[in-house]
Length: 124
Image (cartoon, rainbow, N blue to C red; front, top):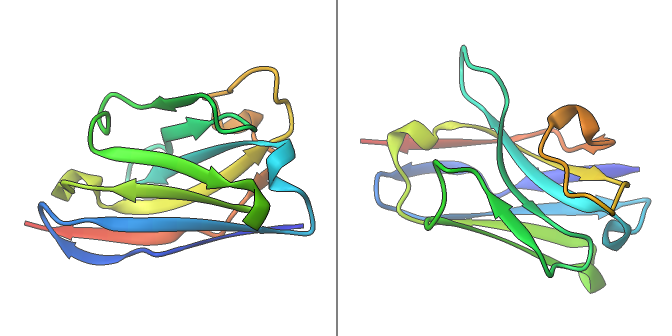
């Protein structure tokens, strides 16, 4: 069972990045997916969440209108499109999967599987 996040990198403020989350060893479509981030010296923060069937999404206030979460269950993948990036978006981004699909949990502690993280650095 593995989740692998990728797509991070260095981008200038105002730029865009698309993060990908690949699942292996389990069916990602049976799970809620969340994206979290952790900046140096700060607590892990929930960024965005998507229901198992993709019909419902949720965003943190700091990324609303700029980030879009999506998934392709046929490919066992989830994505986070990040536009209008700001220096304060700099963090390690993690994808996570929660097998309790009846509620879209926002707490990191509710998630069962975690990817290794991908670093996003936004320069000013």
